[in-house]
Amino acid sequence: MSPSTSLHRFALPLLLALAAAGCGIVPKKTEIAVHDPRPQVQADAAWPRVDAQLVVLRPNAERLVDGARILVRPVPGEVQVYKGAVWAQPAPDMLQDAVVRMLEDSQRLPGVARRGGGIAGDYDLAMDIRRFDADYQGGATPAAVVQVTASLIHNAGNRIVATRTFRAATPAQGTAIAEVSRAFEQSLAQVTREITGWTLTGMQRGR
Image (tube, rainbow, N blue to C red; front, top):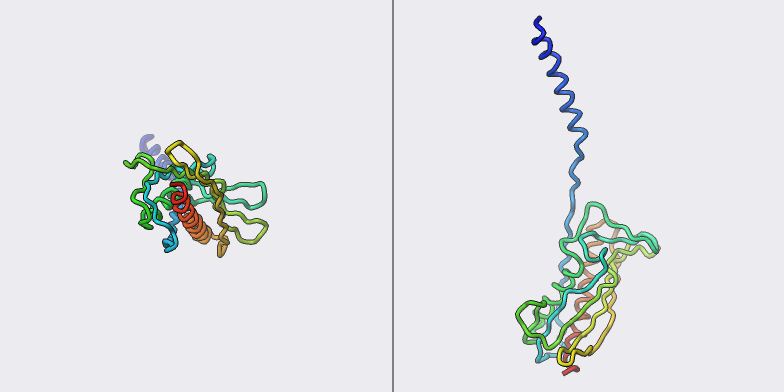
């Protein structure tokens, strides 16, 4: 047997062994579930019609809330994130989209848009998201907590017409992230509906 034949004979099993070992070293890809709450909100017949245009500003939020990670509070004073799950868009964008869509669908005012949307707003709606997390609150299952402070600003004179804090806490049907996401959808729907009605009423009174 020649030296070259002997070398090939032992090299092939060695290469196969290294390849198999390499497969074990490469980390497995983690599956990420993307959740996209779509609140379904019906217009209230009692909402007033307003002859003014509104610009809905992108809500402010702290860094943890203004991101894709889904926050959970397992115990008071501690914030974690759900593994393997993210929001399709940050909470400020979710809220802004929901409020703009609700105001458009209500057909109670001649124009509503985001900043840069091509209209001159008589009013600005500014929002600050204080809470957007799943909170166990000492229980076995979490509640989806959404808390928002809204300010309605009349652009003539740059004065604040009204300010109010809105809060919804919808218990999830279980601990699975899909059940938590559905609870967020309900909380977001409640807050969106309340903010929409309050905004229209404030615009009517502020004229």
